[in-house]
Image (cartoon, rainbow, N blue to C red):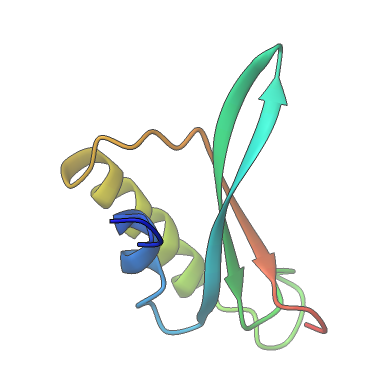
Length: 86
């Protein structure tokens, strides 16, 4: 269905602390790779107050589980970024 989010995005966006997701395309050694970008609502620097490593682990675990078991989509990279101002 046009306009429907990828299933991996739907699952990751259900995690508390994730604000949104999107897919980016990058060229790496003359090949196109798909990157799942996950925006979180807290600082990603482990030394900052409010850092939530459990959410980072949940993002990785969820993306891995969905990509291995629920879709044929291939994601080559996962990037987790803090929401602007974090």
